[in-house]
Length: 324
Image (tube, rainbow, N blue to C red; front, side, top):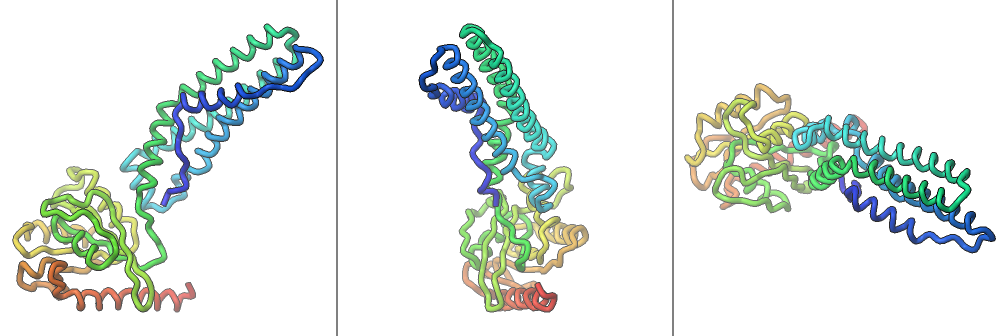
């Protein structure tokens, strides 16, 4: 989703890169040595400015404006990093870039009036010091933005104009097993809770078009204030992704039935999406729901996929009628 965000260099890396490029500048012959030195220092300052500011400006341009992205990503980023910190760090990078440009312009003007090589070298040394201080002052922000960039590049790409099915339920209810059965994704599956740590997306093609299936981390039957970050990712998906919720019930005895019922009621009452009950692990329990499947034996999968195909077809039919 955010693969276009560039690598974020740290302060010392930017300083080293800028100074290295500047050190390679050597002016051709000038009749007066003073003129040669002055031109070299001016060009070095311009090169340092260009090298550092082009990197900073690219950061500002490529990081998404947080208010303009889909609410799902806004709240996911806020959960992971804090939106205010994100905006503050980008603002400091912008401020630093602007100040380096002003500083460079100021020192180039001063150099025009310098008469001796000693004056010129003093100005160059002063510029290098002030430039370095400006860049070093935002190292923590660059580290933070680098971490944001690495995490954002791993976020799933939600397609908003495609029929979507969001799998929800308690940990170990069979969400990952089911999504691996019906799509091409292969999430980590293990016989213990919270094997799904992040939101996982898989796709499947039907006669009428393609659909996306979203596997969310398991939710426990507890107050929102006690839920961990993994559970909050599931809540964000349920809150801000438009699609049908497939709530998975496990009647095998591995997951508490009363807790599942309470969680189902909470989701039905608090989220606007249509919600469908789906029984999993049919190979380990009797049938209790109209839609009941086993990802292990395949029992009930034909009926389940017929239901999904019908919903997918209805989605594309409505879109066609609406002229989309």
